[in-house]
Amino acid sequence: MHDAPPPTPQEPLSHGLKQRHLTMLGLGGVIGAGLFVGSGAGIAVAGPGIVVSYLIAGALAMLVMRMLGEMSAAIPASGAFSVHAERALGRWAGFGVGWLYWFLLVVVLAVEATAAAQIAHGWVPGVDQWAWVLTFMVVFTVTNLTAVKNFGEFEFWFAALKVAAIVIFLVLGVLAVLGLLPDTDPVGLANLTGQGGFLPNGWGGVVSGVLTVVFAFGGLEVVTIAAAETDNPARAVGCAVRSAVVRILFFYVGSMLVIVTVLPWTAQQAGLSPYVKVLDAIGVPSAGQIMNIVVFVALLSALNANLYGASRMVFSLAERGEAPRGLLKVSGSVGGGGVPRRAVLASVAFGFVSVLLNLKWPDSVFLYLLNSVGAVLLFVWGLIAASQLRLRRRLEREAPEALTLRMWCFPWLTWVTLAALVAVLVLMLTDDVARPQVLWSAGATGLVLLVAGARELRDRRRD
Image 1 (tube, helix red, strand yellow):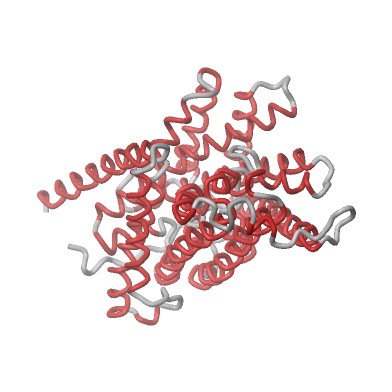
Image 2 (cartoon, rainbow, N blue to C red):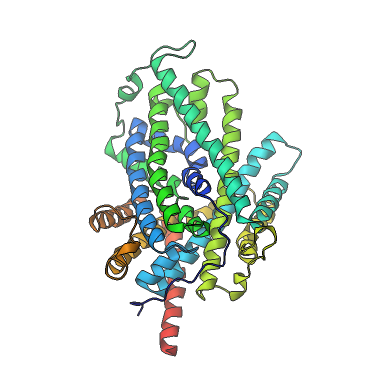
């Protein structure tokens, strides 16, 4: 039993991240290719109702983030929700959610490197795609092997560029709607009410839109992992959570509202950036290349953040005896110190393997990899919510002063979140496109939890 867990040990990692790094990581962590390109698929199925889809998916992500913030402010640790799951539910849960999240990140960072390489190959056809993947892997491995402040600075400026791009897009879009740009007439609400109305495919289209866009909010979790490497983790994570969730909803929902107001929803196509379509329509020159640059930066930013998150998660697992102890080695004081270099190398290893995969099967292998992790994020969020239900009550009894950031309407909103996650998974099972992701991800999750349960059973027998 784990009713009285030992206190979290002092992290041997560096404390080189500043509040501005964490705040911008929270803002930029979820602004990626899923928004800039993937949102076109959501508009295609939901029409203008995609705004409602993003509100629902964003509200779900915001609730999960609030739970994460509550637990991380009370118990800051580099393993974040893996540590919380272990304290709340047992070693099996900490092991399971930690390894699932690590698996998700290492696969996704390889996919992001490949997507960025495809863009770079289009710019410089003379350099093969695999060579670009290798270049990105080397650059970001070196960045993450040096002082954590270097990671923080990379992410700060990457995120600043993405945020600036969205703000400029929103300003231009609003001016276009009002007819204040050269050679434009006021658009009004015609595109929201025409072409079948605001919900051209009914509420079924909105639900399909939620299934398409909910995964775009993955990445928020890295903020709670990074908080452990700030001078004041409890304060830092609280500020980052409070500022990030509202602004992210503004960016996402605001962007979608501008897109479906400026152009008819039928003008959008899955696989093509709706941002490019809008910028082209309002006369911005070279809109396609501009968005290519933004998406390229977004992909590299996500790669950098995912490598960081994966290395800290596997380091935390090693701290608790759930991963090889050799991963606990951290760098000395030279260059900032406190960097878990072996954990970084272990986490980036698959990225280097992906160089060979790009050489041999550039168009097929990642489809299977993405299917294997496609719904893992939802399983991770479910374990986060279950952990918060147990841990909140324990903290109220044992350390109420640690609850500096509290989940709203506890426990009712936590139960609502769990029910919504189950509903999303059930709906995905009824969708022909999404079903393979759920089945592959459920298989991966079941395997990890089976190993976790076997380990816990073995340990109990030894005791």
